[in-house]
Length: 310
Image 1 (cartoon, rainbow, N blue to C red):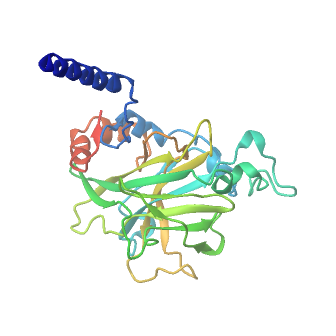
Image 2: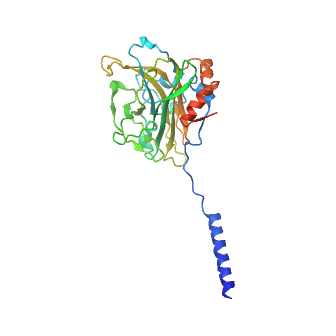
Image 3: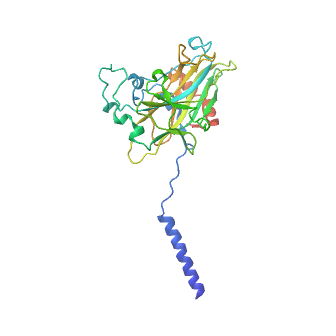
């Protein structure tokens, strides 16, 4: 009798366990960047498309014009322009269909009254832009790619080293440290809006220290929105770029301009899913396709940097 009772209780326990397994909600796993794939055709095309939206508080044509790229080993004489720096900028979107030009300003001038939709940092206080893995690659004269710089923004002793908040049109280089949070998955999260963009950057490096010659530059960064609930839509835009910097010690914003653009990528919306935001410096599709799509060393170099291409 005792044996039958024990068997019965054991069966009941087993049925209960199976029932709980079937009825309990499956834990949601945090999406990671490991499953991301970079499409090389999208990389090429990004620099020849218009931006997805217009950033708030800047000249109107910043978001309306096509992106552009340029790179040469002798820009503007190049004598002192021997360093490069990759960067990005996060803006509140202008919401063109709901904005009206500021009274008295030309259409192509600084645009739009500062309305509620251009303040996602206050309208959506729990939503942040998660930035991760800013990487810079160079294309040599021998048609090979190599990674030259990588930053994950991890500087606990100086959390503002790789980014500050700037007034939207960068007037007088006005900037301030901001609410930067380090995320468990790596990288940082920030908010922008209310008249400020978040401008971040990598490390200043010499792209051609051995005079091997350079034909192009490619920069990539991962980004997503976190803290989104339901159908909330904060409308953040992100653009990636690269600058030349002087190496002769003249690096102030006074009488001397310390930097010129290598290339600037288009503005694209940041989404809840991880996305790659990219920039390359090739000025024609044929040159970009030869270096990125038809050159296996592009995928090989990115794979060594942890990025899978198709």
